[in-house]
Structures are given as structure tokens and as C-alpha cells.
Amino acid sequence: MAGKGNAGKAKTVSGTTVSGKTATTKAVTGKTGADTGGEAMAGGRTLEIRSDGTGNADILEAAAACFMEQGFSATSIDDVARRLGATKGRIYHYYASKTDLFFDVHREGMDRLFAAVETASAMPGTAGSRLARMLKAHALASMENHTYIAVVVQGVHMHRLAATTPAQRRTLDAVMDMRRRYERLFRSMLDTALEDGSAISESPSLTIKAALGAINWMSIWYRPKAGETAADREALAEQIVRPLRFGFEPRRG
Image (tube, rainbow, N blue to C red; front, side, top):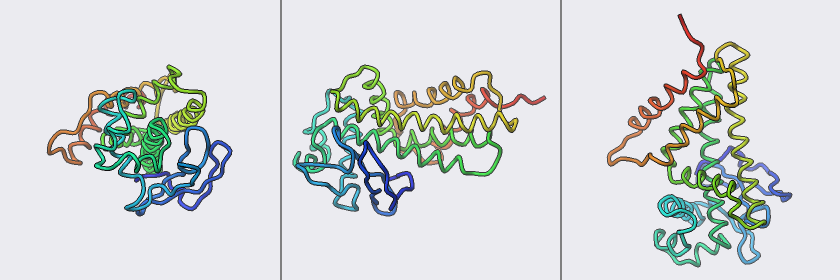
């Protein structure tokens, strides 16, 4: 599971300090429930998450697929359990409710996007070229994690419609803050590119929102094809990002 490189580091979530957890060789962040910050809770117990072989990684995979195919409202814990080939009890060991599970899938999707884009942003080159690589990384990560990204998009709609309880909305507000921080990565890179002359834009905020919006629409139409390869996804990501680059790259000639 991809995280944000904070294994062994403490962080504060909703006023509670928690430690990053590690699954296999990759770090992930501590998760919060709908009402409290901190690690996953069930029956008053603090639970280890993302642990190799015994944790909830496969629960998230099954839940992401169910939420993508059926939507939040139509998906039940029974559906996730059936897809997982397990009992509901295994899921409730980690999550007090379907909403808690949905939010954790959303967080995991954002963690994966952060991991991909932050790697691309650290590559050498002008800020403009790095911004283009960040957009391509976003497109690739959206394809490789398409079930999670579909849940991220659903979460945005839930937030706008206020389709949550007050306690759930507090958690969703924190998740939405991740989205705002994610967008700021792109905006910051564009600002740097404007300063070094490797990009142009009359409205930097609109440029980034339009580019990310175009890529995020993949959650609606993209589904992996039979026999699809990493090279196929690479080529598709390049095709998607190429016209977006025209919106900020300086004109030549």
C-alpha cells in the first residue's frame, strides 16, 4: 500500500497523535474513525492497520471495488464481505460502520495520489517540466488505482451535498483538506514555473483546476481493458496530458 513516507513519524489527526503504520515495505498513515482521531477503533480497542497478511489492506481493496461499482448508498457491509470472501465480523473488527470504511478508502486513494505526484515533483528539470510530469503521474495513479479514485470523487460529492451526520462531516472535512493540500502541490509548482519562465498562465488557479478536473474525469470513463499493460497506461496518460500542457507551456516560434 502506498503511503506518504511517514513511517515511524508521529502526526496529529483531529487532536490525537498517532504513529504511521507499515504494511509490507511501504508506510501508510494512521487512520481515523468518524468521530475520533487516531488509529482504527472497534469496540474501544486500538487496532493495527495495514499489517502484512493480517491487516485491513484487502478489505480496502474489496470495499473500493464495491463502492466504485454500486456507489456509497447502494453498497452494504454484506456486499464487501461477499467480495472479500469473509464474514462481516472481520470488517467490523476494523470499522464501526460503512461510513468509516468509505472514508478510509478515500484516504487511501489520496495517499496513493500523493505518493505518485510527490515523486514526480522531485525529479530534475524546470518547474514547467516537473508540473507536466506531476500531471502525468496523477493520470497514471488514477488508472492504476481507479477503484480508489472513484471513491475519492464520490467523497467530493458527499461533501458538497452535506450527505453526512455532523460527526461524519468532521471526518470528511479532514479528508477534503487532503484534497486541498494535493491541489496546492500543483499550484505551487505552477507558481514556481511562472517565476522561472517555464510556464505561462493568466489564471494559475483556473489552469490547475481545469487540468486536474480533466484528469479526474477518468474516474467516470476509464476501466482497465483485458490485457492492458503498463506501457498502454503510460501511452494513455501521455495522450491525456499532452493537450493540458498546451494550457501552460510557453509558445515557441
